[in-house]
Length: 126
Image (cartoon, rainbow, N blue to C red):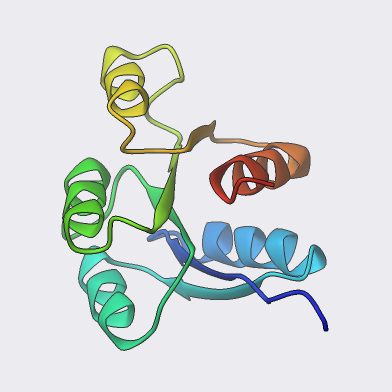
């Protein structure tokens, strides 16, 4: 039997960033879908299951932290990775979110491919 293909949702309002993450993750065999708003993310999560969601901290319609809390409340089994060019890993907001278990990982922009692979692996328990 083959290994299950893991579905990952990418939520980023910058099309180039979504495209970049999508292509980085596809190299490792993940199935990906990209949306540019929190509203689109919630709608897609209603339609199909995702194991992991990469969420930009700044979205046009909702704060990434707020979206993350909504997702975790409704879909507690989904792992989340926060991506941000605004916050840094040592910011108190990020540290608190990681401690409370809201996120499996945090990635600062700009990032290296290996950071994305490591965050996905950690979030998926691989």
